[in-house]
Image (cartoon, protein in one colour):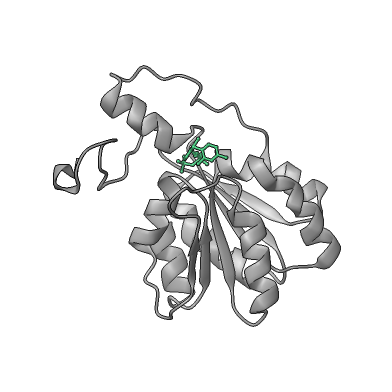
Length: 189
Ligand SMILES: Cc1ncc(C[n+]2csc(CCOP(=O)(O)OP(=O)(O)O)c2C)c(N)n1
């Protein structure tokens, strides 16, 4: 998904990410061409960062394509900003990688706590309907074969757009360093 966005924007978009697996996936698979085009909530990352940050990026660089790549959990932290998008017509593209989990935390629970999942499964609302409530057009895709066309539709649609992509529920992202471990203990699987 991220590679397709990368290809169709020729690596020239400003990519803004939130916190979690999607953040690392976006960093790994988007082929950035220009400096200052990867905006992410690193370090003490705060869920909910990416939507308002993407809006700010679009206001600062109106001629650039700005794509926010967001997890389903993070999106629900600041989705009310869709109201600001509607009011101010900020043309930001929103891509939700929806695994129906707080994926990064689930990954840790799987790898370090014998898959004892606690408070990480998400029962999500209908994101496309929520966007429609704010007059932001959108689409949900569930099949791999649909995603190239969906990215094109998103980029070709003037103004803001929300694309929800249903992804593998229990996929993991590497490399990672276990809590309290030195970098030499990096895990690749
Ligand atoms: C405000 C806030 N609460 C909790 C966390 C801890 N945290 C980091 S990533 C994450 C899960 C993110 O889930 P989701 O947005 O669905 O993204 P995914 O990892 O599935 O891509 C959580 C709870 C945080 N970084 N910020």
